[in-house]
Length: 506
Image (cartoon, rainbow, N blue to C red; front, side, top):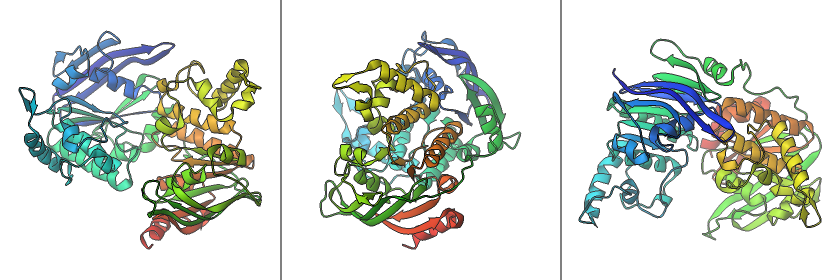
C-alpha cells in the first residue's frame, strides 16, 4: 500500500505547555490506524493540526499528504483534499433535518437557490451506505447518539472523504451501537477509505486497527503493526502509562457499615409529557463505606433517576422519600440536596458539570463557596489554596489552577468535576459514567478516589455502561430496566451474564 499521509516532527505549544514534541506519523492508503494514549497525550491536538483546526504556522514540522507538502490554512483546505474529522462532540444542528445537516455549508444549489429534492435524493443514498433507514427530513434531535454518529459519517462521505478521522466515536454509544459503528468502519476500509481512530477502548482498537500508534506526554512512544504481531492490551497499556498495570482495579477491603441513605418508592414523570412515567417505584439503600452500582442498558432510566434524586433536576410529579441516617431529608432543590449530604457528578461534564470558560480554581470551589468566603467576600487566597490541594490530591495535570478548564483534556476535566463535588463534602456521592472517554491510567486514579471515599465511610453510587467496571469496583449492583429495578446482586454473585439475564427477562 502506498503512503497517503506522513507527519514529520510535529511540535505544538500552548502557553506553558508543549502539547506535541516532534511527533511522527505515517498512514498508508486503505488502512485503519489507531491513535491511543492517556488523556493529555496529544492525540486530539495532533489531529487538529492535521485537519487545519490549528493552521500552518502555529506549529513546527511538516505534513505530507498524497506525496505533496500540505500547508492547511484552515479546515476548508483539508476538507477540499478529502480529510474529514469527526470530533468527539458532534457538530450537528439539532433542529435541522438529516439532509440539511449533511449538506450544511455544501448545499445542492444553483444561482443561490437550494435544490431540496436533490439534497434529499443524495441523502437517501448516503444513509443507505451507513445503514440508516430514517427519512432525510427527520430532525436530528429525534435521533439517538448512535444514529447521530452515523449521520456525521454520512456527512463525511458526502464530501468525497479519503481520510476519515474519528475522535472517540464510541465514547457515548451503547455496546450494540458501538459494534455497528466498528462494522461500518471495516466496510469503509473495504471501499478504500483510510481512517484514523482515537479511542480509549482497547478491545475496539484491537478489533479494527491495522496499526496502533501510542502517544505519551506529546511524543510518539511506539508504533505497532497488527499484521506482523499479536498486540495485547497489556502491551498497549504499558506503553500508554509508562509502567505495567497488572490490575485494572485497585484492591479494596470491602466493609459496609451502618445504613447511610435510603430511597423508598421513588417515582418520576417525564418533564415534557406529564402522563409518561419514567421511574417506577424505585427503592435503594447505601451503607457507610459501600460502593453501590446501577447497571442497565442505555435508556433504562439510570441517569433520570440520579438527576431526579439530586434536587429534582430532572422530571416532574416526583414522589417518594429519602432518608439519611434514618432521618427524612429534603432533596427538593439542588441546594437542599447538597445540604442533606448528596452530590452528583454528571455524565455530561462539558454541558452540565463545568463552566468551561472559567478557571480550574473557580470550578472547584463553586459547590461550596461559603467555605472560601468571609461573609459575602470571597477569600481568593483560600480559594487558590483549596484548588491547589485538590490539584495535587487528584493529580490534575495542569501548569496552574488558573488554567481555563476548556483547555484541559477529558480526564483532567473529569478530575476537576470530582474535585468540585468532593469539596462539597458529601456523605453520598453519585457518579454517573465517571470514566467515560478517559484513558486507563486516569480510570485507575478515579477508582482509587472511590476507594478513598469508601475508607472514609462515605457512600458511593456508580452508574456505568461498562459492566466489567461495575463488577470490579462495586460491593452491590442494582440492575435497572425500563425505569425500574429488576434485580439486586452482591459482588460475589454478580457477572455480566447474570446482569444481562435480569435485563432481558424483564
